[in-house]
Image 1 (spheres, helix red, strand yellow):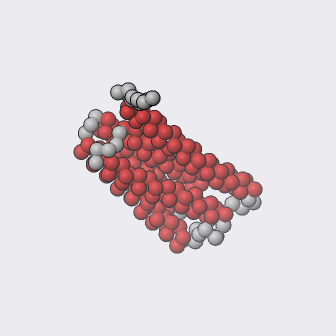
Image 2: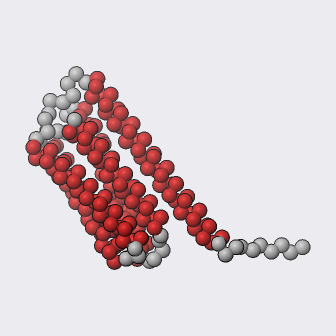
Image 3: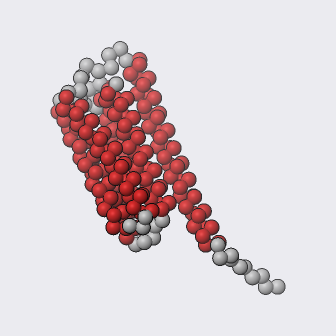
Length: 197
């Protein structure tokens, strides 16, 4: 007996929707894992700071503090430029999508460069990873965040390539956006809890 397998006309679209949902869910799980890592580190920071008799004898200077404020503004701006990426992609304007994607990438590079400059400035002023617990926590959290920014930049390059090849959809743009906005939120949290408080 011959059995014929037939596919409905909508099966292809259903498969694409399932793939989109799977990739979206995968990114949510990845972000949840990263979030738990940062939460655990920030919780450890809170415990160490509470138990320490003298948290640190070093007071951050005006220049590093202002640089931290500027860098926080930079990463917030990068989230707003990525919002434009999503907006223009949904309108089908690939040129403006690529422009704002490139702008987001460049702003991410600026953030990393300023972070590197901030680290060098603090180290030259005696705020090192081995000087006290505060230094160890700051470099561990900001360094881990910087590594995730590098991962985000790689995702931006990947997305730009997919858009050029016309092999992407709005789901991919949303997934990369979720990760990028997450990194902005993480940095704001680090800035407030470790630098300002």
